[in-house]
Amino acid sequence: MSVEECAPETGVTSQDEVNVLKRNSDDVGWEYGFLVDANNKDKVECKFCGHRSQGGVHRLKEHVANVGTNAKKCRKSTQEAKDKCKKSLEDSKRKRKEQAARELELREEVNVSRVGTEDDEVTCVGSSEPHKLGPIDK
Image (cartoon, rainbow, N blue to C red; front, side, top):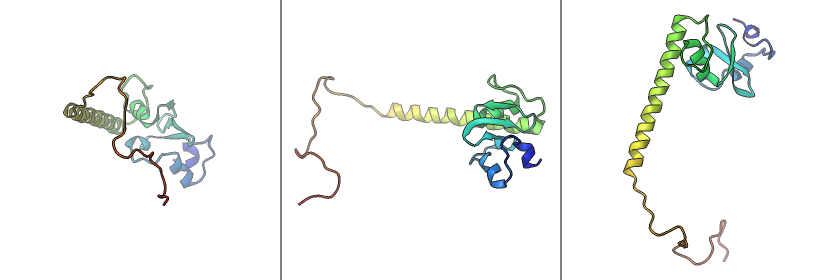
C-alpha cells in the first residue's frame, strides 16, 4: 500500500510524515489504522475499510475486532487482526482493573485523620519570617 493510498487528502508524501500520522506508540492498533490529521490525535482511519472515527486507537481496535458498542464493526478486517485487537483490548482492561485494585489497597493502608474543625486557624511551625525564593540576602 503506498503512502498516497493511506492518506490521500493529507497530501502526505514522505515516510517521516507517515510516522507522524501513526503517533509515537507501539500499540498494535496502528498496524490497522492511521491518524487522519496530525493535529487531531483522536481521528483515525481504518486501513481495511477506510472508516473514520473519533476516539483514537482504542476505538479503532474496537472497530477492527468487531467488539463493543462504541464503534461501527469493520466488515473487511481479517481474523488475525480481530484476534490481535481483541487481545490488546482485553489486556488493557485487565491492566486497568489491576491498577484500580492496587490503588484501592493503598488507599485502605493510608489513614488520614483531621483533628479540629474547619474554623481552626492554620499556622506554620518554625520561623516567623516569610519564606523567600532565591538567594539569601545578607
